[in-house]
Length: 388
Image (cartoon, helix red, strand yellow):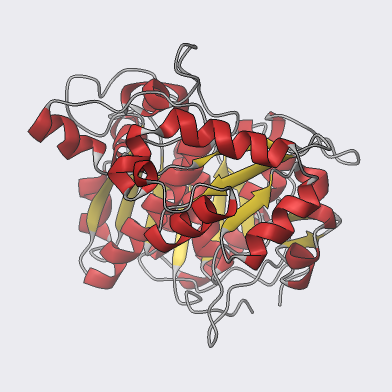
């Protein structure tokens, strides 16, 4: 049987794409019995992006559906809808990301589901939330990245606003949803958890919200820089390697200034002084790094206990001894993927298997519901190949 700190939880995952399934994935990694409900023909995430060379499912699917059992249900079919309702009766959590109102139209109104199962937490992940004038708009992470203020500050000063080249908002919202879900479960009260992609991103805009709300000021685009830390940028070494530098602590900044020959200069004495002389400092540091190899730069920064790192691509990550020592990337059923998001010393999470085939556990799940009878919890789904 599955073990872990959340092994007493049953989660029904009827969400698709990344954010909703990602929420359920985090719970599954720490032992929750997660049943992935797929539409006929399989979840759309199975075809998202790069494909597994053997079975044709996407690499996204292998990660998003890891540690989950799968069942195929047509929620417009009365018999399958009855199975879905029985699953919700047996569950602690339902995760969905339909447009607002869709779950209700399918006959799965959260109010009724919670009335049937008073402990049920219904986590709803949408672009804009369950209310407000934008609630019915189609939405993906792109809209959240644009509307949250993120894109406006991302890019070069005179360039276009840039969107992240990864599923940043979806992954972020997945963590927000997992956190909020566990808060709701801990409360012991059946309820709806309303998570929006836009507000998840807004949370991470930090002091920019009061900056405008109180002072009427906006953060400008600074490329790899940020307004309140100088130096903070990427610089190219003599051997063509980009190096990222940050000096968010005053003591670190002063050691960097000393290293590049600006020690004692009144223009760099404080945070505000350095911000006012960003261009001069960036130019001096850029010249200093451009005159040295990447290894020389990194050695010098380490010597003075200042923060610097080469800009890695994925090949560098796979080769790096620190990632290897911590087993940050593990092999699951022949698929390399990131290990669990955080390490617990006493009750760790574990990845037991990658995303499985369509309806791989459908028969076993239906039989468990029949054995348990209506209104009762059938317990964890049967152990699957590769579970611990």
